Length: 533
Image (tube, rainbow, N blue to C red):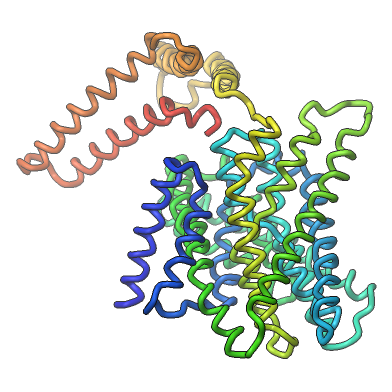
């Protein structure tokens, strides 16, 4: 009963903060983390501790899967150089840089253990950065790099952590380290790709969208757990499975299955992402109490955490500077969207850490010297980067003048795309074999009706573009407004029929679903989702 009440209160807090965040112009994860810290410090509030295995094996896989299925494979391929530099090179540089710092600060700590903590605090969490970036209109390519980095850098960091922990138990050669890394990466990606293809094949043959969506909730764990059990990267396995699913789902799944999956996973992702930031704040009291219990110096650990944060930020600025300079080098075919110095500053300041850093730190072996202080250091890095960098990122974006595609241009691009797919559809209408789609003789009026509906969708998209420039609503826009008004009256009539008991529950449910789908399609076009949001 107590756990159920805590879960309900947690969801209420998350929803309330998410509604408040846009009004105060702060990212919800920042508010939730600070709120969690405040709640943990209240008298009488019990200590909160969640086992690291729950976060790393229970929360991380679905979070990564939810992000990877929505990241277009083409975005990952086109930005593979930048993502690799940030997710692999930067993680290794950060782990060794902060590891050397901690090795210097703690004489009793061996270098392998110090690098293990460096690996823990190296990966970033892009949730806060991307939520701020989308609100302020960062360029899509910059957002894609941030999202791609956060998907892959957890894998690099956890593989490096595993290797460093193995090194604390005995001598490990450089070749062994490279071998372990290659084994983990290659096998993890291969297993994830196989799981992705297999689950797409199975789900494409399940006619019920509810059942197909239920299967999707198993996919991240089906990719993660076997990979981890054979020493491969479970994180990369999940990401690979998600990317394959997102890429093939557009043509393999039915429209109801895609809509069901998208809505359910968005809700699940929203609760998990925001819940872990609230949890991260609530754990402060527990982490500090453990350090005090072991008679370690809490202020010293916090100071070392601040020093580690400064080193991480400096290393990130250095790596990003080299990366952006390399991307802007003269070449035969210049890339007009290559990240420049201003985008590099924003990217450098977007290195916030999250709950994975804290959970990974808590997974450090008990035999490591100063383990509890190291956990507090990781917590300090996570909280400071999240709150300080997250709170100041909007100012950095404004000062650098980095702007994405204007809203008007997004709507125009959407209209151009709708035109493109409409013309391909018209080609099919002009094909004589279109008659094979129906049994019997195809009525020419049907062809004309489909052609008109397709043209109206295209016209509506262009009218939305004109409306965004201040023009009055045109014919199709007026149609949508009138049709929405009529739908309200039709819905009232449906409710009245249900209250009278005039029709069966099956007929009422089908009519309700029909009205909902039509209203949702009108709202989807009108609120600008089709324009890239």
